[in-house]
Image (cartoon, rainbow, N blue to C red; front, side, top):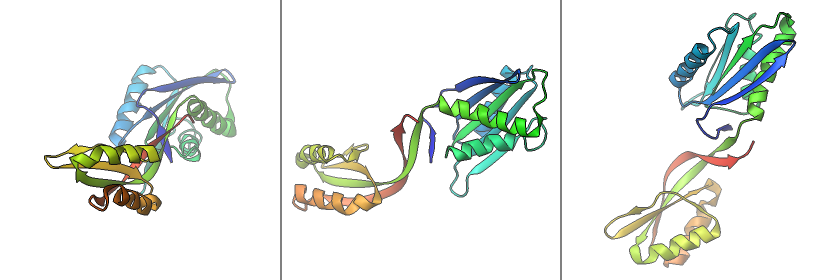
Length: 212
């Protein structure tokens, strides 16, 4: 599972049998954001023949998925666009494919291929982050030990999150795979001679950088 690396607009254009297909991709965090993005693109390309849309947004349950053919024959635009997002394992993403008709009809199969290709062209030019489940573990210890333990954890390669500095206690946070929990606890106990308190605070979805 992955999503666009930033909330910047991704846009690409392709020409198929004289029709222009302009794909606009945007990272979104909810259905309302996707629909606002669709309105912006439709306003920008108000003279286009079609502005077909698709989006996938994560929720606590099943993802929300919607698509629209915007006047193209049923199932030839929005559904292929949505399938292209699914096939690329992309979520939290809204796509608009703007078509300027070039005078040559593509037929049902041609339209499916064209809208799929348009989305794929945009995905090929985008940068992504992987979305992976991680656990956030809190390491609470005295100020005098915090620097040594933090340096050791970073040296081991753990990803550290936000630290909290209280009057007597510093809380470091390590973002790890669940399978690494026992290893983290053992390392902290060894470094602090059992004086640190290590607890799992929550499970989260972490963004892991990648180029594609």
